[in-house]
Image 1 (tube, rainbow over the protein chains, first blue to last red):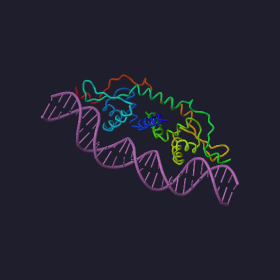
Image 2: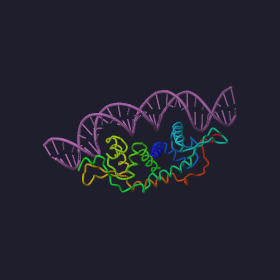
Image 3: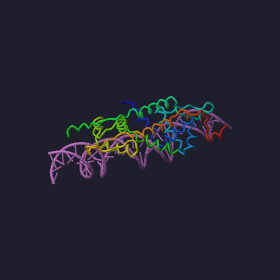
Image 4: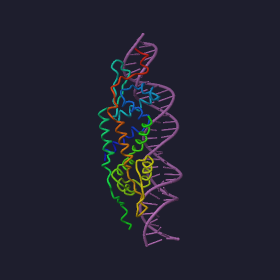
Length: 111
Length: 111
DNA sequence: TATATAATTCAATTGTCATTGAATTATATT
DNA sequence: AATATAATTCAATGACAATTGAATTATATA
């Protein structure tokens, strides 16, 4: 029940094309904001916004560069990703799909 | 590239809580509009709307009842579902996540 | 034909959210 | 201290989409 609501909010986060493109980059490894900006041609402030949304959803993590703390590095959170992956596996499992005789609640009135 | 856009539109379709609840019911087997309405307490015209969106996305199919064609039965499309399931598996595959030295495109300017 | 049921379509409203441009913060270098 | 860079925050705008209520369509029965 509630898990479905969780899923819907994850779907919502990944539903935006720009945000999904960013997340996809981060699935491929660590990136800073401006490298993302160069790759997908989107202004940095907008990327910042999407990174925040992804962070709040727990899909990505961030840390500042050791040498030079002006850079902030982002990457997908492996633990969260694999948990989400399993959730989706279960949600779309064929074994959930039963042969079922549909029952219309108002059907009794007829016949 | 384009596959990601496809994914984002599927996410969009499943991002709405009401719609996801409907889809979840249909994953469990065939339902008519009014049985859905009874189970999730949502007006039928709204359910109709969401069913249409799910249909256009190819996630569900529909057919009229044999005996009484006033009823329209809906269910999740097994082929599409398993294909989507595989797509998500690949998208969230841990093996995609590389150890990677981030390269800031403007980093050359410094040092 | 007239009535009832299941479902859809239509028009209007409302709220959410991506996007934009400007300003601000944090860190580093000279 | 002054300047430059990376990134974020803020305020405003615009567009899309969920929801609602009323009207309409499709099918069945008497």
